Each structure stands twice: as structure tokens, then as C-alpha cells.
Length: 475
Ligand SMILES: [Zn+2]
Image 1 (cartoon, protein in one colour):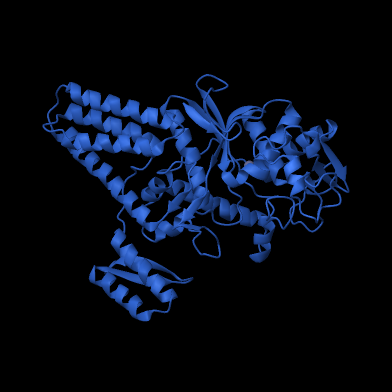
Image 2 (tube, rainbow, N blue to C red):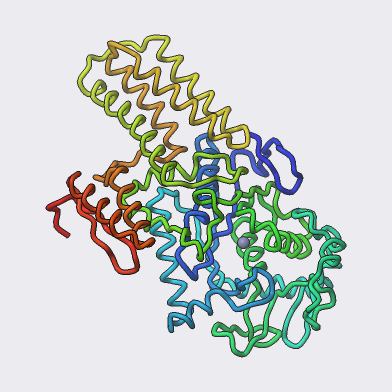
């Protein structure tokens, strides 16, 4: 099993700390808004990796945190707390906001058939653990207190920059002129913040305050996986400052190597553009499902490209994903029919080989730094050959089904298909929506007429969305 390690910039052989076991930590959502497809690409890569380890017989302990305090708008020490900002905007308590969006995250994870982590620790429930690490960092001379704030002194950690390449020399050369006067070095970061106006406050040896975002992951990962563990995953935007600071904190506090393999997922594009709130393309999983896309197609689409490549998510890609899954499902239907209705018998050697070669090649492909395109290629070669096999007996059908199930234990796309809106109907509805936005009423009406002629109705929903129903269907 080989993985690309961001820390060493190399593809390395994976050697677990404990034979047969993997400890894995993934930076989870900051629960101030609905997570979007870009966030989920990273969560799905973690899921794919975990499922593949399990396929290979490893026992995986997977921890994914929930950030419900301390994540500031600009990822560093400036700007408002994302949770607090959402709370003020919606006139709610921050914990209410956190619960609401945690539920949304869990629901979307379930829709995408993501295997639950062993634990989803919440930052607000681990304040004591954070305080303990901060105390240790102060004792060891890595952190200092100024006016009830605690900062990490990056100059004390010689390896600062080893993950991201952002060494102090480089950072200081490009530093902004406005610097926080409290900090010894402009690159020092907050471990504990004092802010009387902040809505979430805890007692600490340095007075009331709240933790910095980075210390949360150091505290929760070491609590559940130990001070040293195998794999840490996240999006590429987590590399700096978040993961760089996690390393500085954890290694200074424990004196151990924090993480052996760092895995980062590249950004998702939408239709060739960067995803952003202003472009309106930060789709959530629930929104795509409401549009009628199949949840397993969304999953397939988001895992179908290599995690170290930017992936361009498009509605056409979703359509292709649906077709790909249909191909597998048709093969499964035929095999199930044969398994139930054909006579029992011996498995022909060529079919035995077909299965064992498929599983071997699938394993080899994903063992090569999660080469998913190659693995999917292996899967579809198998489907094609299985479809060609004639006069199959029930024993053979059962064996081929078993192979597909083993592959799907990693891909996770074959859940029961629900009745769904056909892709061409969704496309017409999307064209109608675009035409309406452009105030092209003529095209919008023509699209509606086409949808109706195909036996569907489109209803507008508040906020500019729509709902598709089969004509005559209630609700
Ligand atoms: Zn984190």
C-alpha cells in the first residue's frame, strides 16, 4: 500500500504503527453552515481510504472532529468566529447553530453512504484537554501569555514549515504590515483567546476565553488516537496554517512524531469555476438530492477522480456517474436472477480467474496511492466480461456477485436505487432555472412545456429553487 505523504512530498509505502491497525484522524466540518460538495470530496476521500484499508483486512480507528468554536473567518487569528457570526446573523445561540449544522452534516454523510467515524468529538466538549496541552506548551517554553491571551512562539519550534514549506523566513518576508503588537513574532498563533464579547467562554488559568482552532485538533486527536498516530487527512486548504500549527503544538508538547502520513485532497471546481458563495455554486448534498440526482451518483462522481487532482464537478459528470452505476446494477440484477433461478454447478476455471484477477487488480490499483480511475477501469472490465459469460449456473452467479460486493464494500455505491427523476428532466429544469434568472421567459416557458410533455411537473420553491414531480403525483 503506497500513499503520497504531503510531509515528505513522496509516495511512500504505508507501514502501520501496529500491525493490522490504522489510526486515522480527519479534520471535520466547522458547523456554521451546510457543508457543500467541496467539503464532502475531502470527507469521501477519507471514507474511500478507510473502506480500502478495511477491504485489505486492517482494523481502522477513525476520528473526525466537529469544530463548534474558535474557527475564525480568515483561518488565522483575525476576524470573527464563524460560529458566532452565524449565531448573530440568525439570532440564535452558537450551540443551537452548531447542533443544527452538525445534524445537516450527519444527514449528508448518511446520504453519501459515508461510514460513520468511530467518534465525532466536539471541540466544546474538550476544552480541558486543550488547556492541559497549552499548560504543557507554556511550561516547556513554547508558548507565552500576554494579557490573558496565550500564543505559540513559532521561533521555538525548529521544524515550523516542514509540512507546508512556509518557513518563518519566507513568511516574515511576505508578512503584512499590520501585526498584532502582542505577538513576539508576527507568525505566532493563538492557543487561547481572551475576548469579553465572544459568546462562548470557558474558565482557564489565563482567565475566561476560548481556544484557538488549531489546538482543538491537537487535543482531540491525541485523546482518541494517542500522541503519535498513522494518518491525518484534510483538504489542501488545511495544510497551512491549520496542520502546520497542529504539528508544532503536538510535537512540542509530546516530544513525539505527531503523524506518520499526511493526506490532502485537492480542491473541487464546479463547471470549471472555483466554488464560492457569490457564484452560487456551493451546492449541498441535500440540494443535489432535492434536484433529483441520485445520492449514489453524487458519491460516485465525487470519488471518481484522483484525490490529488483538482476535480471539475459538473451535472454532466453526475449523469455519467448515474450511467456507470446503472451498468453495475444491471449486471447485478442479471446475476441475482441467475443465482436464484439457474441450476447449481461447478465454477468454470475462467470465471474463477475472472473474479480473482479482478480483486487482485482492484487491490493493486488502489494500493497505488488510491488510483481510483484504474480501479474503476478494473471494475468495468469485470462487468463487461461477466455480462459476456453465457450459460451461467447459480454457483457461478453467486461467486461473481460476491466479487462485485467486495468491490462495492470500497466504492459504496450500490445501495438500493430509489425512484428518481431522470437526468434529462433535471437538465430541462436547470435550463429553465437559468432562463428565468436571465429573465428569458420564452425559453423558461418552453422548458416547462417540454418537462410537462415528458410527464413531469416543475414547481418553484421559495429561494429560487424548484421541485420535480411526476405528473399526477401528490405531495
Ligand atoms: Zn483540524
